[in-house]
Image (cartoon, rainbow, N blue to C red; front, side, top):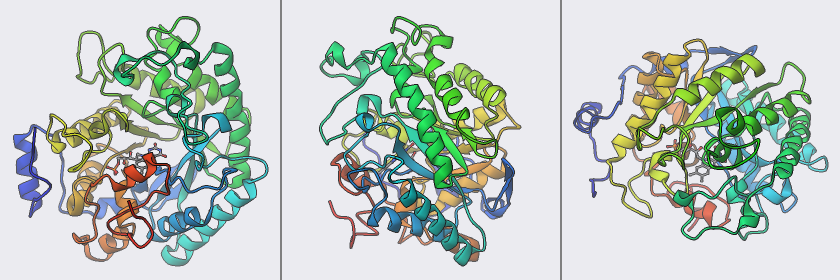
Length: 432
Ligand SMILES: Cc1cc2nc3c(=O)[nH]c(=O)nc-3n(C[C@H](O)[C@H](O)[C@H](O)COP(=O)(O)O)c2cc1C
């Protein structure tokens, strides 16, 4: 279904199209809610804007942050989000998503420490406060490409994700999973040494922990029942918790909905087709809160390889989705709101706020002031125009000529294993 690229002159015009598309898009002209502090895990977070994890494929061969990594994160820190959710960092070399994915080791933890120190200093100097910084610890599973070629480690054969069935040898054994769990203790200890405030046991976008949530067809202790499908995630939490002091919190970026029909996806049932059913997601978040005291949850959806329109609504991509981008955005906002309403006392960080361009802050403010989430997370916008926070604070508006145009250029760089950034607004550094 073709649709007109983003062209709305006003929030009213955007609202009107969203209404016609049946999309949940609470917009607010008053964006001051975004500059209210939030108390979280013993920290005061200065504002409600988070920069979401954005893998940059710019680490050194041994996993350390390199020149472009420092550049990216110092720009982020100077921009002044209350929270920076640091990108996917591998827990083991064999499950890196690329030969340049960051990977924390005893040898390179000092470089991470230096980067975090510089980020805090930069934000203090420019903004007068330091951001909360969470590390996303990951096992890329199906999307492992440790030397640049695919080396998938899958939870189960998933027809929605495999054009040709992968060999059975790609399916991880229960022993592999136990080894992978142990690696979270090592990474968690290194996260503490690097100075992260919190650790995300990444469970989204169909990387390994996320994929296991829908392992209905996998035999043995990691498949079938809800208890079995959530076992890996919880064991990773237990491993990480054993390695960190109480002041470093654990949390997750969680796919509450994958966008694939049962039994190929989490967040659906055999009866609902593709319609989200968040029952298990709510249950899981409640259990993580009860057992691991997570102080917030980062809610996301979709798979960046097979249904990126569910994950990050766009105007230009490799295929034309059969829904309007505002419908996809509305699905994400509705899911975020449903989780927040199910757990009113747990701050929810919502994802995918970039699509509405210069009106993105209006959506973020509408969501936060309406109680639909506690914080609003920006991905692609952080690459294109990190300083939008300064402009918003100073003028209540952001510059339409600097916003992300959802062209997919940054994702194309990532897929090519090249350093990722904005090919439109930062093209002196990043080119396709
Ligand atoms: C180049 C690129 C890298 C990304 N890297 C990560 C990552 O490391 N971890 C993660 O959870 N999501 C990652 N994402 C997803 C974003 O965090 C975000 O969820 C998505 O872009 C939707 O938000 P947006 O509409 O604000 O861009 C990445 C997205 C892009 C385009």
